[in-house]
Amino acid sequence: MEELVVSMKNIHKRFGGIHALANARLELRKGEILGLIGENGAGKSTLMKILSGVYQADEGEVLISGREVHYRNPKEALDDGICMIYQELNLVDKLSVADNIFIGRESGTGILLKRKQDRKKTEELLQRLELDVPLDIEVGNLTVAKQQMIEIAKGISCNSKVLIMDEPTAALAVSEIQELFRVIRQLKEEGMSIIYISHRLEELFEITDRITVMRDGNYIDTMETSLGTMDELIKKMVGRNISWSKKEKSNVKKNAPVVLEIKHIASKDIKDISFQLRQGEILGLAGLMGAGRTELARLIFGADWRKGGVILRNGKEVKIRTTFDAVAQGISYLSEDRKGNGLAVDLSVADNVALPNWDDFTKHGVIQFKFMEESVEEAAKTVAVKTPSIHQIVRNLSGGNQQKVVIAKWLLRNSEIFIFDEPTRGIDVGAKSEIYKLMEKLIKEGKSIIMISSEMPELLRMSDRILVLCEGRLTGELDIKEATQEKIMEYAVMRN
Ligand SMILES: Nc1ncnc2c1ncn2[C@@H]1O[C@H](COP(=O)(O)OP(=O)(O)OP(=O)(O)O)[C@@H](O)[C@H]1O
Ligand SMILES: [Mg+2]
Image (cartoon, rainbow, N blue to C red; front, top):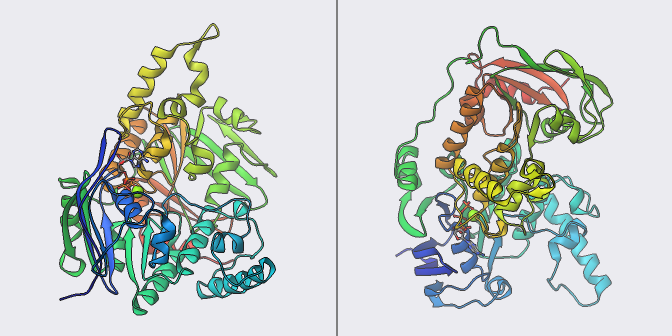
């Protein structure tokens, strides 16, 4: 018999009227990497929060190495060696890297001594992860990806026997993911058991030993990774087949006008970039983390200060100095960071979706609530947000559903050009294909899209043309016909 480190049986959990978990189950063996997968809202995070003491189950049994436990808080779970890295980053923006890693944990006695020891340990940890981050920088100043790495360092620092990672790679680029995998394999060698939640199927097949599938709060099945196929897994997850293939050729019409032209724009991080976007085009922006894709998007959107260059809309030069200018020019930007720029998590779905569109819902100074609600309902339905009502607080939605709210918010805007920055990050395969359909619908309506993505299959499936950035420079341009993962990578790591 395999030794079971964790055994969860018949777990039920309700939030008000929502039955988040109904007969959920999970078994984790010693020294294995177990993948956990399921659609957005399937209950993965909730199940793991029960395991790590954040929530308590309404019913069911949790055994740790055969012993029944009832954790009342995360500290009790941590003391038992169970450590969870949360999906929504959990760092304190204003604290340093070192303070964030050791917050709330005792080491030594006096404060000063503790600080010194913490610094030293942090240094060692960052070295082990080969992470180049200054110890004293406030984490709020780091990129989302770096913050994610700090979370991981924090998780590894607990000396835990069970490490739960809830979508750890959502914000990481290819090289960081490989780095993370190296560390995960090392931890497994050391006998640690790891639960790995991800919507990226390729990742699950690369790193896990077994995969457990959940649907609607229920346990569906567990398969040996080496014996299963991707199609099987998708079928178990969403109950239907979804195909994934590369776009064969550009769908842009021959005489489609150029709707946006960027000439020689530059900033601190962007070095003289020029390109055109045509009507009905999906232009993919590829590159490794730090290549400058988001920076470029923010420049076009007027969110950051531009050092020079010209932006033309429909052939005419326009001034875009602020985001208001950009919106007035019919440009929308869907941020990659849903927690920072994208969403007010303590407000309702309705408020979040309506907020940037407030003017549209006001007539002679009076807010047209009914019209607003109808519009929000429709937008939420279009992107299939799973929520009991549009009045639910966004914080209570599952991660992927929060992302859909961001998209719904911008859909209501009558934009001509959409910049999607990692639009499907953290979104399950079923919902991903919904979002792709939505993009295709926008294109049919004559809109144009710039899509930043770190997921190669997504870039190859959606783009008509792909631009590749490396260190703030445009290093390559590929028509979809000639684009391959290898060619994109080649340009992405190009040194000058
Ligand atoms: N604190 C809460 N209050 C109310 N409902 C909640 C709360 N936490 C989770 N839920 C609901 O429970 C269900 C399961 O959510 P959970 O976050 O576990 O999903 P998930 O599988 O992790 O999804 P994702 O892939 O999007 O992260 C969802 O319907 C969610 O809206
Ligand atoms: Mg989740």
